Image 1 (cartoon, rainbow, N blue to C red):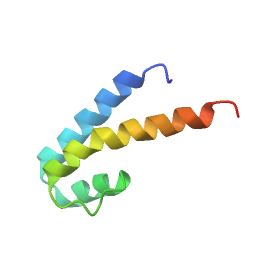
Image 2 (cartoon, rainbow, N blue to C red; image 1 turned 90 degrees about the vertical axis):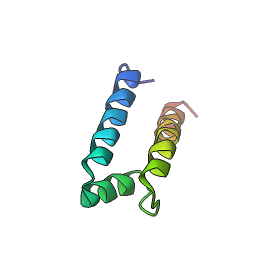
Image 3 (tube, rainbow, N blue to C red; image 1 turned 30 degrees about the horizontal axis):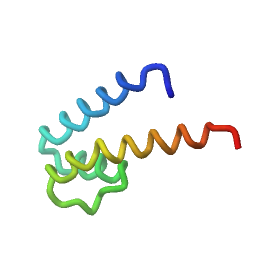
Image 4 (cartoon, helix red, strand yellow; image 1 turned 135 degrees about the horizontal axis):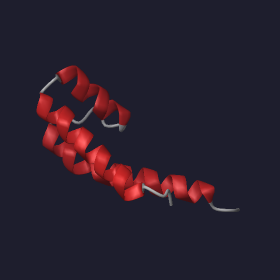
Length: 68
């Protein structure tokens, strides 16, 4: 696992909050799209799903680093 994983996840969460609180629809769409969730209409649904998506991405990265 990356050395600063928990710090990085916290920074991601803070960035998501900042973008959603900005109410800038263009930036919100870009953020949702970055997570593959552009189709999610309600920001609170996106915010609740986002951490799960980040966790799954982290698991995928770790799995890809394991020897086969």
